[in-house]
Image (tube, rainbow, N blue to C red):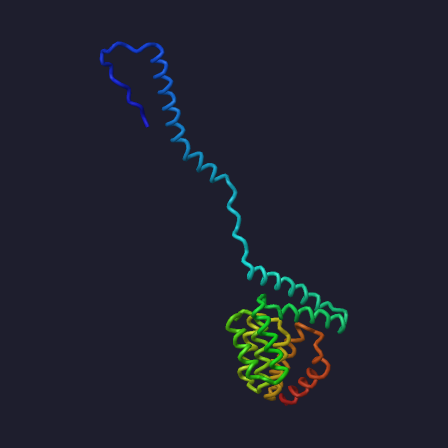
Length: 227
């Protein structure tokens, strides 16, 4: 910005007061111009020095999953150091309780109804309810695990194994699903596969009751199968 001064016209010169007013006005305009030029740089410096904006708040589902994972990590660590079966049983109960939590009242209600249908041997209704659970909450491992159990009870071992694969993709430490895989392999007399599945389950939960009778029997059968 620059200021154009008026040409001399030969008219009578202004009074000293008018001259001072013009000088004052000219200074004000110049100062304003300097402020306008400097303002963008001041804003840029302020933006550069200002702290970054806070991260957006975590959504409820992510916070729930993070809290659930943290609690499970602590419980599985404690399970490895359990003093004995009684101590381990308490920890396993806590783990199962966390697995059961879906974070949704609607899903929890469907799971409760499905469990009641399974107990009354109404497998058709249970299958419909669990299908709804899986459709609405595909990342909820226990929905897949419950349906794997249902399909095992119905004798559909292939479908049960497929659901177990889903469970373990979401929760690799699910010793119940690993043991379920072992039971299916036992039903097919695949002793070595069954033994491998139970050993994987025991690596996560060393206090499973199957370690006393099932695993030793599978070891004997696997050994005979290799002879």
